[in-house]
Image (cartoon, rainbow, N blue to C red; front, side):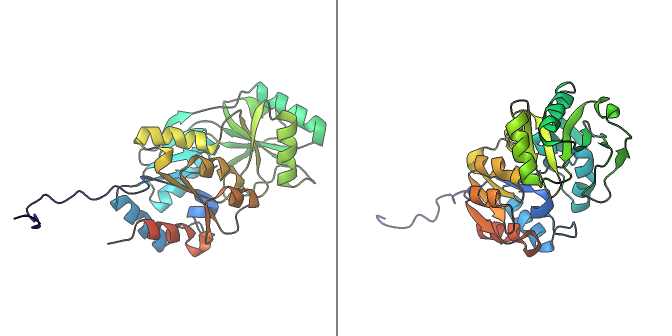
Length: 282
């Protein structure tokens, strides 16, 4: 009958989620200050997964240092580790891709930087799934419990493939040291800040967004379908790469300026607040 409702017509398939990829920084965004993921955030991620979205962790931690945290919070998907240098399968405990810092270039860049700013304390993160942190004289570890080998000098820093160098200055703050590094050796290495007391020298051109784009391709996802959450300046390229970038409250001003919105802090379920709006449970 004209105008009659056709109840026999097949039901439409559920609409695809607006964001098929959810990318979250680990420290300062996904994790609370006590190193756990809240029940509310876990439930919000589960609702996103039920809607068809995939969760990828993006962290400055290299895979060996990310692994125990990812295991503890039950993340079994992909993780972008080492500031984008590594794509890690957390469920299989296997590195899928890895980029290293040239071991001849690293000491040369360090020497040029020290010629400008004075002596630095240095640590190196070895590459690989079992790579260790090598800390030179005077380097202060900012994260408790990291497996670290102390060295009396710098010669041993270059003995194995490296993911990155971390540098500290006795007087300059992180922003000033990072700015100086970009000015002096930015044509040789990448520079990132990833938390208090951590300025990093990386393979040139490498960012967390580099690794995330690789992970996204492996998952069949795109930047246009990605929402990303960050808490440190190293997340700026990620928020700019994603279709929507979200900074947590209290994040560095540079990150907040790059974000499309600012949510609550990591201790106030900032990630969950946004995901609940996008992927309502039930």
